[in-house]
Image 1 (tube, one colour):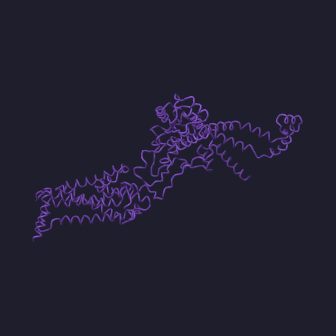
Image 2 (cartoon, rainbow, N blue to C red):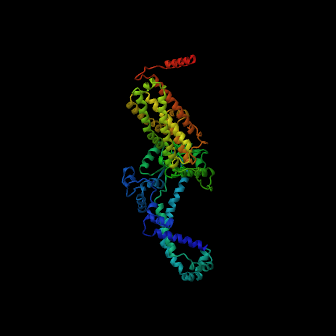
Length: 595
C-alpha cells in the first residue's frame, strides 16, 4: 500500500510539475499524460501520405487563421484555441471539437414531458459545471489550507487547550466529543506526510481542471417552437460551429393540448409508454443512409474516425443519454447498468492495398487500350489497303479462294496480339499487381479481349474503302468504347444483371467488369481462380460471364462485318442483299450435289 501511495504521489507531482512549468500548452499536456514531450509531428493532425498541403489550403472557407474565437470565454480557452489552430490541420480539428465543447442541443416541442426528460439529461452536462465550480473553489482556497497545514505541524498549543478542563466541558456539552480521543489522535497529525508540496500539486491539478472545464458549455439544451424553426436556428448556429444536435420528439402532446390529467401524470414522474424521437445532426457528423452500402464496394474495415466512424462524433452518446433518461423516468429509479459499448463487426483478412482497386477499375483497361492501339491501327491499314487497291479481287481472279487473305490477315494479327497478351499477363502477375490470380486465367481473359477487339476493328473497317478514313474511325471508336464504363461504374450498385449483360455488348466494358471483379478478389487475398471464376453476388457479373460476353461480342462483330462487306458496293463488285446471298449459297450446294 505504501508503494502504491508513493507511486500515485509521484504521478501527481510530475503532473503538477508539467503544468506549472513554462512549457507550451501541448508540451504540458503531453508531459503530464504521456510522461514525455510529444514531437511536433506527433502532435500534428495526421496527414495523408504523399500529399503536401500548403498553409493557404488549410484555411477553410477561404478565411485566414483566426487569432481568437468569440464564442470562447477566458484567456485560457483562447490560448487553447490558438494552440490547436497553430497545428497542421488545426482548423479542421477545431471544426470537429467546437460543436462537442460548445454546441447547443435544440429540441421541440416544449412541454412538460420534454422538459422533464431533458432536465434529467442535462444533469450529465451539469456535472461539468459542478466540477468546474469545485475545482475553482479548491484552486482559489488552497492557500487557506496551507495556513491550516502549518498550524497542524505545531500541536503544543492544541494540547494545552485540550488539557484545559473548561475547554473539555465545552466540547462535551456542545459536540459530545471526548477530549481524550482528540489528544490520542494528535500524534498522528504530527507524523502526517501531507506536505505543502502535495497541496501545491493538488492546487495545480484543480486549476487545470477548472481551466479546461471552463471551455465546455454546461447548459446545452435550448427549446424551439417547431421543427422548421429548429432547422433555421441550426443553420445559424452551424455557421459559427456551435450547433451540436437537434431533437424532435414524437408521441408527446403540445403545450396547448396539455390537459390537467396529463400534467398531473408528469408531476408524478409518469410519462407515456411510447415516446419516439429523432436526432438531427450536421451532415459531417452522421453517415449517409441513402444507400445501404457504397456504390463501388471495396475491401475496407471502415475504422477510420474521420471518414467512417461519424456516429462517434456525438450521435451515439446523445442517443444513449436520452434512452437512459427515458428508462429512468419509466422505472422511477436511477439505472445502475453499465453504459452501452460499441464494438465494430470484425472484418475478414484482406490485402490492404487501395491502389489495386484503382488499377482494376481504370488503369489496366486503359493500359490494354493503348497497348493494342498501334496493333489494331496497323491491322486496319493492311486490311483496308487491299480492298482500296483491289488486290483481293486480283488474287481471287488468279485462283485464290475467297476469304483466304482475310484469314491470313486474322492469323498474323492475332499472333501479335496473343504475344502481347502473354507479356501483359506475366507483367500483371509478377509485378505485384494481380499477385494472387491464376496466370493462365489472366492470359485467357486478355486473349478473349484480343479476339473481340480484332473483330470490332473488322466490323468498323468494313464500312470504309479508304485507308485513312477507316484508320481514323477505328482508333476513335476504340477509344470511345471505354467511356460507357466510366458512367456505368457510378451506377454499379443499381444496375440489374440484364443491364450489365446489355452493357457488355461493348467488349471493353466486359474487360472492365472482369478486371474490377479480379481487383475485388485480389483485395480478399485469393485472386481469380478456377474455383471462383463463376462466383458473383446478386446482380453482379462473374469473371466467367465476362469471358462469355467477349466471345459473344466477337461472333456478333464478325457477322455484322461480314454482312456489311458483302452488301456494301466496292470498287469491283455490285452490292447484293441478304436474299441473293442465301440463294447463291443454295445454288452452289445444289451444283456440288449434282456434280
